[in-house]
Image 1 (cartoon, rainbow, N blue to C red):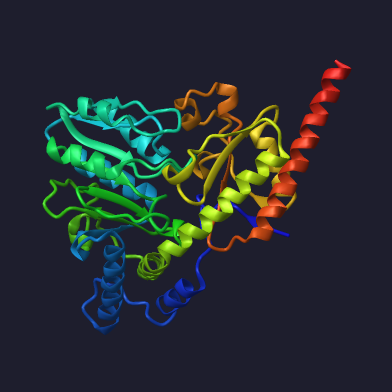
Image 2: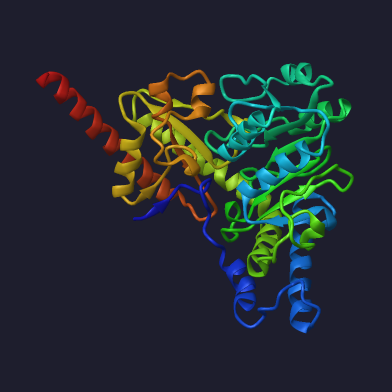
Length: 384
């Protein structure tokens, strides 16, 4: 049996989405900026997709900007908003995605100040500390709706209300939340999405930008996307993203319930079969319905990922964007784990294609791998 449990890294392209894309990879090849009939058909397809993305968020279609993916969306969001503001302090958290952290580090090099608000032992933002950090120097807050490694969901409505009361723009990285949780743009100024996290194609993303938000484009050279992101549109990818967003909106409730049942069954079985296992993800409604991050005493995380791969099970040691780096997870470090423990987190992230039989297979494979690892370590100590 082959089991894919790395849906936070990427999801399978849905067959319905592929069918929607194919005409724009074959016969409907016009440039959406062209004025002839081929261009008009491409432009109509882009605008229909824009409506699909906007509907998922409760936004106006004119506020949706298409990008090449979540990383570009985060870069555009933070740089476009921060550089348009006269205030040069950015507030964020220590557990943001690497694409946010790297942009923020770049702002520091440009003379901006950065404040990281504290989190608790499962990664939730200290809302009181956030409020205290928002003085007159702050020009932007950037916080992820849900963490990609451990699944922690932030109280975005409360955070948005605080930012709105202080007149500080709020950017929300919703790449992991969209399609898994009800996501909206109430009180939010900029919000990032990625298509391949919710059944769409890779290489396309979107950005919600509130219409009256001061904005400085990063790129020049064309008037596409109302000048906010110039460049010829990836029509087929955009069509796929719009269709994926429509499907996600229609299936949201059922998806969440199914994933919670599988995730909880996975955790219960892992606890039963594997002694000294620790849950890094929060329990209950404070976590993405599909995400479980664990650490196992005496078992290297990368070794367990490799052993499960040999057993036909795909899981992750954390963020796909940091895979192979060999560094401790910055997320687990921020939760207070030691550097050694922060290397050993393993993330199981489920999706609409997973079944209970697959969960049973994953648990058997994990239990066998852990027993082999622990037996080898016992023999090493005995022979030492």
